[in-house]
Length: 226
Image 1 (tube, rainbow, N blue to C red):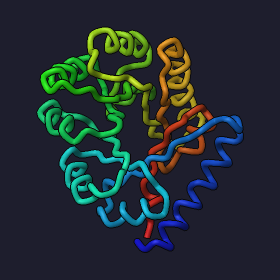
Image 2 (cartoon, one colour):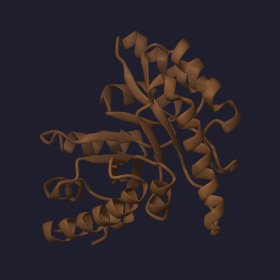
Image 3 (cartoon, rainbow, N blue to C red):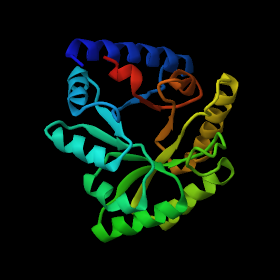
Image 4 (cartoon, rainbow, N blue to C red):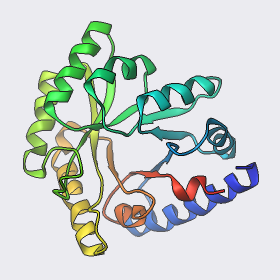
C-alpha cells in the first residue's frame, strides 16, 4: 500500500466515523483501531505516516513481530484476539496499550498472577458475549457487571478500562443493533467505576455500533485495502 492509498482509505473511514458520531453528539469521540492481522508491518508504517496511530493484532506472535519491526514508531498497540493462558507472559512482555479480550474471571485471575510476579499492570477491557453466540468468547450480559466488579476486587494489577463486544453475526440489522445496545447498557451501568471504552463495531457494522454508543471501533478491510 502506498502513501496515497493509505491517506485515501483513512480519510474515507474518518468521514464515515464523523457522520456516525455526530448523529450521537458533537461531543462523542470515537477512537479507531486499525486491525492489521492480515497486513504487513510496512502497511502499518504507511498508515501510521498517513495519520493512523492505533493498531490491533489477534495473535501474540504477530504483535511481537510487528511491534519489534516498527519499534521506532510510538504506535499504540492493542491486543484484540483470544488470549491463551500459555501466551500470557509473552503478551505482558510486549506491554500493549490495551488488551480488548479479557473474556472471563478465570483468565483475569491467571493474568493478574503473572502481572504480580513481574510487578506490572496491564489495561484491559472485559469482553461480553452480548449476542449469545457459541462461536464468540466473553461473559454473558447477565453476569457482566458482577464479573467486572470481581475483577476490580480480585485483580489489582489489571486496570479495567471498559467493555468490548462483537456484534451478532447475522444479516438482520435489528438483531445486531440489539446486541450493541445490550453492551452499551452494561457500560452505562458501570458508570460508577469510570469505564473509558465501550468497544463495539468492526468493518461491516462500525457505523451502527457508533450510533448505539461505541467509542472505540476495530476496522481492518476498509483501512488496509490496496
